[in-house]
Image (cartoon, rainbow, N blue to C red; front, side, top):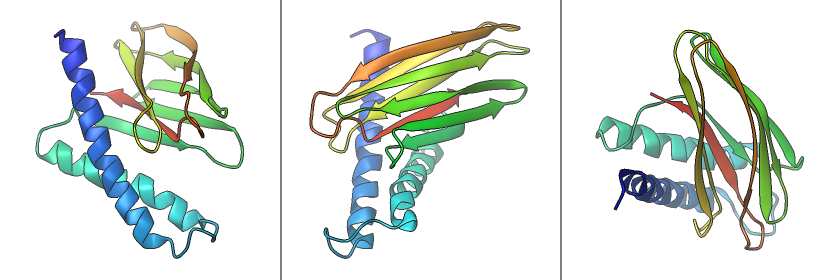
Length: 164
């Protein structure tokens, strides 16, 4: 298997573990399915996923990530993101649709080449993608791409980060 395939399988396994933790915490936090989730409850999966990532990173099983933004489906279907890493920056939007999403924006590298990574997934990880965009030192690269998740509800979240 190519190295890229191994890397993606590893990320999928780590995402599955983080999602399982987040789902357990969310199930504990919500009283009944009929109740609407409060802002605190909707933040719980992100916090649990971040804790799971931090634990995995401490064990040395996941690459370090800096300035992570997790964009989750909300009432508004277009969600902005902006992440800085030193003088470098990535900025853009994630637009969620019923069974797909579009990501657009740019990555600006100042003193060194910078790569931004996007990992998207749904609740049971039956849909998953891992995309990167790289700008060479002193350049700005725009990006725009779409992904499809042909299951009800589509994608649940997208992680955007600069891998270290």
